Length: 230
Image 1: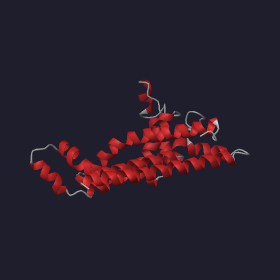
Image 2: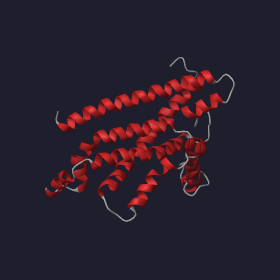
Image 3: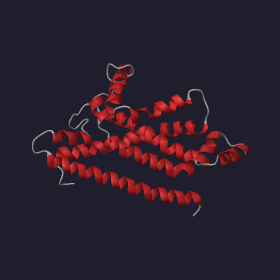
Image 4: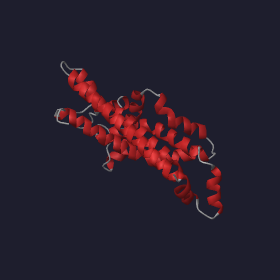
């Protein structure tokens, strides 16, 4: 990418790093929550479902402000975490956290739909043979929902790459530290002569998003064929 300047390349590299870690952080909890919503009945289930999808409804700036209240250095959890050396506010880790929170609903929804498409009788049959619930999930459910997990992970990655409102509110727009692709595009558009740089970054955003979607489609089809025994 020699046609990108140092500042532009820094934003691209940081965005990829943030999106990757946001997806990794959201994946495990996302699968667990999706399974709970799809298979379990418990008091307050609709409340949990509402909280999971809240970032899709709230203005991203509001989500970022809530993260600042909770995980800022003077926040409810952030103050305690800072004492043990874990700081999110105004750091790239905070950008990853904000991106993970915003991407979480998309991941959960995709995985939940995949789980609901699996016939519960298959899981019950494995259970009658003495397999534990965890073993049934790992050997029966998970292989069948892999395409959905992959689709959810790609959606989460794409959302994390494009996250702006919550990120800039929580970790600001610090060059080399928290300036991701969307923040860089915004910054370039605020200065005279920055349109060309902004356009290059938009092109990179489109390329990365399309590449991720195409790759996920190819992998999902191969996984689905393998699971189906084709």
